[in-house]
Image (cartoon, rainbow, N blue to C red; front, top):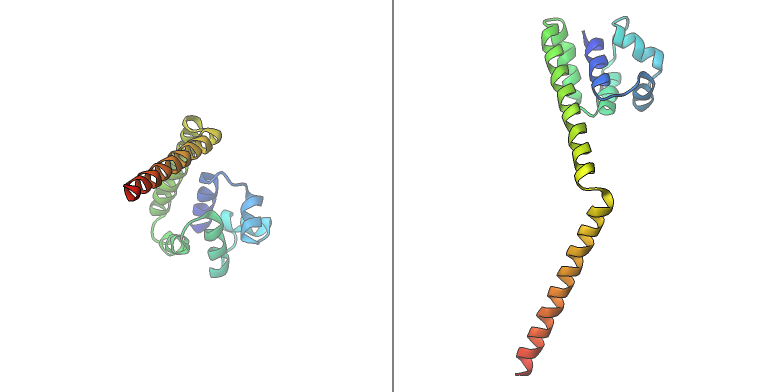
Length: 132
């Protein structure tokens, strides 16, 4: 069922019911009804939800079409999305630990200084060769 898939995707992205509803510009009660299977989502609502979840609109349409055939496919896709979201979060944490934002700035500044020194050295070398 599409509502269950939306619920799983929302939780995988660590979003609350109210935050997803606000992003999709729908009411919390409508989203709750859709997730519980008590109400069908229109194509416009599905599109707004997919954009708010950061997934291609076709994903929810495929899930909606396949829900009648197999809930296993929806569960499998939702599990994959959850794993990807968790991996993305772990990667962000590792990057933040290994490369704090202040060290990234100093790294880029030192690279910029190095390039500036090299360009000045090249100008001096050209000036010396032209004067000879």
